[in-house]
Image (cartoon, rainbow, N blue to C red; front, top):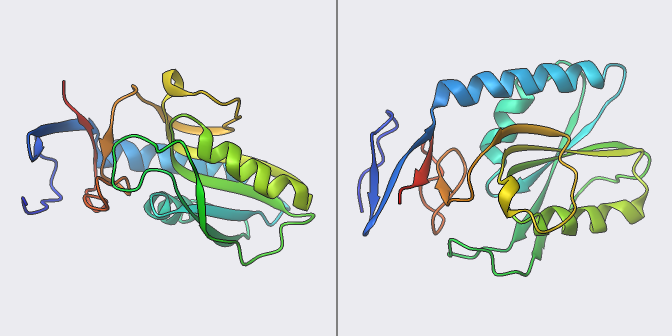
Amino acid sequence: MPEINNEVQDRIIIGTEVFVPLLKEDVIQERIKQLGQQISEEYKGKVPVFIGVLNGAFLFLSDLIKNITVDCEVDFFKLSSYGDEKISSGRVKLIKELSCNVEGRDIIIVEDIVDSGLSMKFIEDLISPHNPSSMKVVSLLIKPNSLRYNVKIDYIGFNIPSKFVIGYGLDYAQKYRNLRSIYVLSE
């Protein structure tokens, strides 16, 4: 297995697959700063609960929170729909439940990527019966051409092509999350 080098590489080879840069660290960080400013403005006078979806969203949530200027709380869900594969299994499994009470609270779900929308639909169906005051979604990445479920993403970092990506929290068989840039599977 190749060593991880956090400098932007022109390609990363995993077995026979080649990944090339899609979004560099500075571009990602600038967009997160913009999202943080927008969310902070919209939640003035409120104390939202940011709910990260593990494992992928932990880096994005960490950097996003650094750019939030209103009081807030943080909690986590852990879901699984991919296992060690590059495509979703089509089933979502809840592995870790929330610790907080969402009733009457302003909830912001934090996702690393919205692909088909299956996980987001699962989360909406899980949280809505608990009567939050509001529920919005922020996703670093969205694959608009892959969406199969009608889900609303309120804050979008980047629209990307329907290709497999790694880095910045996104994994391939639980590896490569620690890359600072995001790489896309080359043709």
